Length: 129
Image (tube, rainbow, N blue to C red; front, top):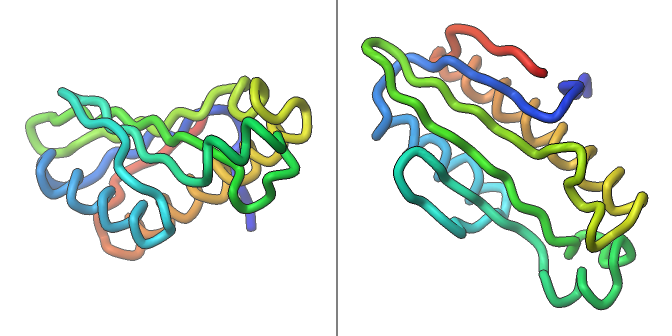
């Protein structure tokens, strides 16, 4: 799979903020993420076990704790979604291995989100940075 490079994916989607939020909720919960925070334009989804990650670091495997930070900005005819994961993702609790795991998982998730919105006919444009 060709993963986005960088630490954020910016999608411009057809539709309003409410339909975009519903799409994001479906997308992330289908993949085992849970809503951790939603206020204003920011939405955070989490997956994995914070406790196992604190105890085992990157060795927590599939239970490695991650947070997907999303910002939803509604425009006149489209909605921008900024998915950030940052260069420090996974580093604090998992060291270098944790960072590599986090970058891989976020890259795969970002690519799947891009493909889903494209398949659903909602994607106007996307870019990574």
